[in-house]
Length: 303
Image (cartoon, rainbow, N blue to C red):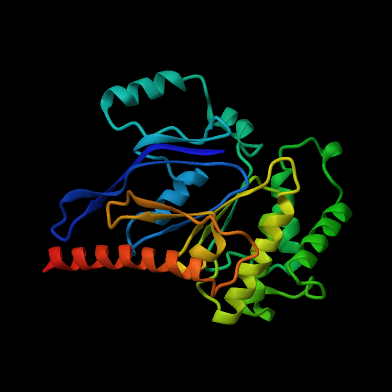
């Protein structure tokens, strides 16, 4: 279970006159996402979707509010006043940089993130990209309890096969097509067996046919995890309304900046789904209408 409670994010900027200013990227976002669900977040460009995803991942701290995963705090909000700063210093005055290093050996939460630009290492073969991720995940475990290199290779091969990359284990990313590189990124994310996968426009850089194939691959692999005790949560940022509705149990529509939840649209359509299903098209049209209204309003105010 992911719980976002009243998340806001203020970003300091310097304007063209060299004066300090700022903007609110995310404003008062609250949402709960149960295990085993796929949720898409959609909205106009610059509305704080990616910022919110990074806060969920613990890559950014919220200015206000908190994220909890299975009841555990991901990151505390940043101190924003002198009093909060003093309280923060008092609370952590005994924690040294060395102690922080010890505490971060184990990942606090089982989260994997997939980006639009593949984010695979170009100097590593496909299989070594996955082995590297597996090594990072077990870095804090005692050496005698870690899997052997051979076991890691076997696990990497298993997940490459899962995404249809058998036979490409020793190819470099430059030798793979865009769709294959994104399959590699998906295999690497799955290999660490996370509870949560966060995806930031993961299929935007591939052609339409590859995109549909990747969507179906994602659904198949996600369905396989539903046989586990704790099925994974997938949260997807996308600008593609058709993709959002086809994949998701729920579509969350963000308002223009500052990003807040404008609407939450459940997609109660049985899987497997057909992209041409009239029920799917009807939901798509509702979301398109919301987005078009927001764009028109934004243009009206900017004139």
